[in-house]
Image (tube, rainbow, N blue to C red; front, side, top):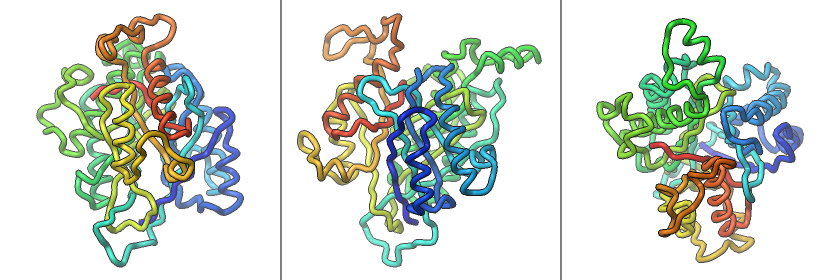
Length: 352
């Protein structure tokens, strides 16, 4: 397997010019595109329609090249967005291609990037944020791991995008006499993200399946995955799961690594993640080092009780700006100070 990565700037949520140029110039074969993951400049909430606009524009461009409808594109290629480019974060998309015809005839200890993308079945509104949501993701993760044929310790990142509860879905479900996990669309993001995070943990055997209960979702944070990044949106009704790892059979020029952040300002954690991928940056990246970083994905969370380094912050009490937006802005600035490139995928909130 050979994976290539193209990080493309976007002028607005409907801008697919960079992608179109890749297709027109034959730099990439559209049939080899496996996933597109990006940041749009909406609010990141339940009513962030910039994600749907970006999906529509990208799937139209891909559909023309593939000779299929935009709806068919989204069934073949994962197109996942995180809304919110607060602070210095720059709107962009990262295109991943995978050539399965290229193999490494001499596998060695030098492991390189591999990727698998899976999609779950459509989830009913009454299943969102509950055990069926957990198990659907766990199954998809298991399928991806089996396809890649690598050990769980070689998996460094699992990106999951799934559905939240829209007002329409809540109303129609209740009209059928069924209940939903919450009647608040924005609160449903918490349950959806939590269910998907636990799904990754179960799929990777980080925690036993029998330890996960419906009551634990979005509540028992002692249960977690160390490599999951999950987000939810109203533009999708199933889950898209992308698993990244390293394999000795890969011919990719890239390596992936990861690290956990102690806080939203943990600059040493950022450097540790980059070092895990094989690049040692002591302070700030030089121009040559920055060019070696193909993409960065991160999860941002407000400090517990709003206290950071012993001092009170207003992240959790700010009535004007949601804490997820504050956290994304803070972490985006920290990472950019190291990498000198604000095209960073920073998603807010870290349930499980």
